[in-house]
Length: 142
Image (tube, rainbow, N blue to C red; front, side, top):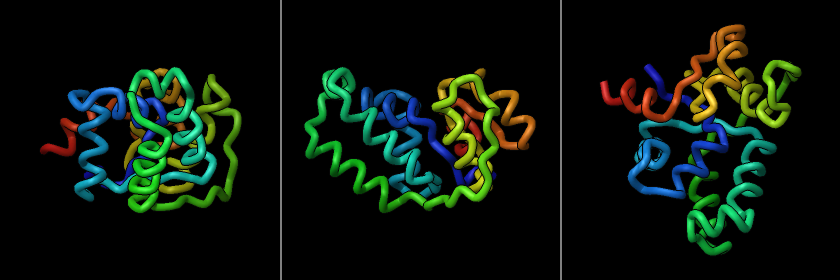
């Protein structure tokens, strides 16, 4: 059963861009406490930095105040993860290392991303399922 998940920044960004997408459905499961998101401080800070970029603000249409409100609501639901071991390098993109480390150190049931290929080998190496938002939704609805 999937309960504890690490959300890649791509999922959070996509969730705010459209209410009709799988990423948004994943965040609704978080809001309804059907999923517990796990995050390290650096990962959560990445959510903030990316969501506040000018090009992202144009895409999702949120003000800085509304982004801060969203992040505060998300932070209240996040289970913090302390990184005790760094496993670098494991993935192609160095900025993805902290996402994988949150999943490993937090003993996540899954790492949820739109970038499956970037995490696939490392996920197998560390026995962390790597799921796209649509695949996660199929598993949770069972």
